[in-house]
Image (cartoon, rainbow, N blue to C red; front, side):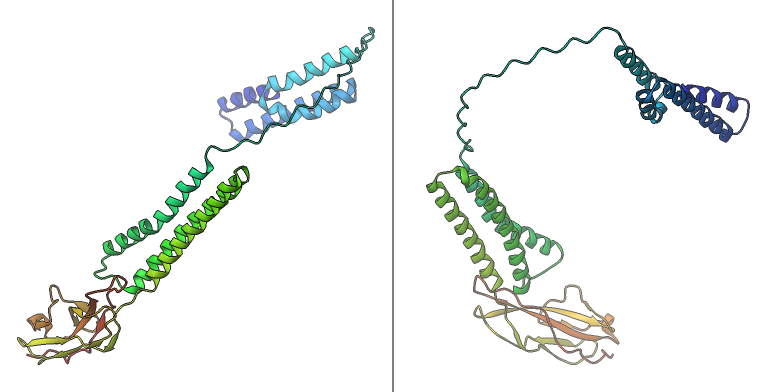
Length: 310
């Protein structure tokens, strides 16, 4: 009721052009007056009605219906408790007969937990090469021209961690399900888990121990630093973990930062007009011709030439 009165009065005041805060104050005043009236009436009816009114006052914000229903229920309970007719005594409940305890149902067995474990382990082992190929793809798309042993080591460790987590999840799932399996299934399941973990560990260690050629003497540049002359790159000395090596060259122009010269990837480079006043250097990477676990080396830079003069 207080909500209805306050809303009507607020709309009337707003329609008369008064400030909205006056309507809000009038609304709260009507609500407070209605709550005081309700509490006084309930207090005169007894403690039960008073407690019910205290519970109903906050709920009255929902509207007149939420305010009227608790009062109606309180009046019905009071009239029923003050009647002259005695309440009929409840009949005693019949004594339940003792029955034999039902046999415990047999434990439910999951449908072929061994097949579930085999599928999870297959996914775990397959996660190693899949994650490695994904990381290699991102490496190539990022602009990498060669794959070094250091990059393969990082890819192998990341792939091994992902595949190891998958095996760990499979182990936890199997441990909860193996309690419902036979002894033979338990032995086969745990043996499969250890086999999958061994395969992933062996692959991780094999790729993490990959080698790359190491530079022993830095590359050098021979030739005169003048316009129109030809500069020649000497690759220097390298270790040969995979047999004979091939070399990739990239000429760079420095002033003072060094940047790649477009299409200058051969052993010889002809000095052009853009090189005037700048320094030239060459970067060399060694590639093994044989070996499955031997990868390209890092780029090694030569010393800079003197400034190019006319």
